[in-house]
Length: 246
Ligand code: NAD
Ligand code: ZN
View 1 (cartoon, rainbow, N blue to C red):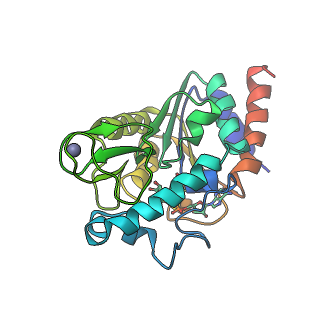
View 2 (cartoon, rainbow, N blue to C red):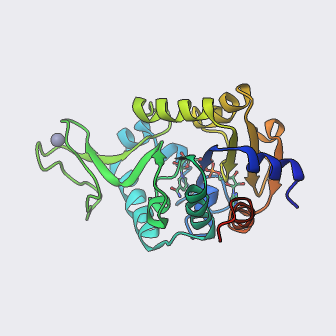
């Protein structure tokens, strides 16, 4: 059951931020990092998605990325992604901040999306400034077309800095929103996990949707224990009632 307080908050709030993590795409068949399918060939994602992992064995890292690219290419958005598209169409100021690199929010039709950790289909050169979006890779040692050095996925790895412009946008939206949904993230990766605290410090109402407890659970004003694809459509139906659209 969704509480009356949440319903009232939804009724009053004209600015909403949604932070999503791998849990939102779990039901599209994309493994999360910390779920039961998190390990790949006995390697932890933290070992592979890191500058040190790439320096140690770039071919292994590319093999993993090429496998993930294949999984993601075949995946389709699920009801959680589509419910967020509906929510955006009903809210004056709607900002979607995602830690996912799978492009599924865009594929579903969301518009104001900030990809904190980049996009798995983008690459950049390890040596010169070459970057390319949606770049096809056919082996585990792709070379830069400009300088011939090794390319890498243009995603933010563990221990790397976020794009400052994207970070600033996410922090600003968090500091000024009235309602904040934290969905399907283990809330262990910073600075993403700190955005809800920024929001709460500014009087925002926090709602967490997750199948499990996270370090942010104690801060949430409303905790919804369950799957994003089940609960987000219910929330969208409430918005239909609130805004009178159907
Ligand atoms: P995570 O793997 O650490 O955590 C996933 C969270 O989702 C867990 O808290 C889990 O309880 C919850 N969850 C699982 N199924 C759910 C469901 N159906 N509904 C609601 N919640 C569900 O993922 P994270 O917090 O996003 O952080 C790890 C990093 O993983 C991010 O930096 C991200 O870039 C990367 N990642 C991305 C993808 C993707 O793009 N789809 C997939 C795996 C990892
Ligand atoms: Zn280059």
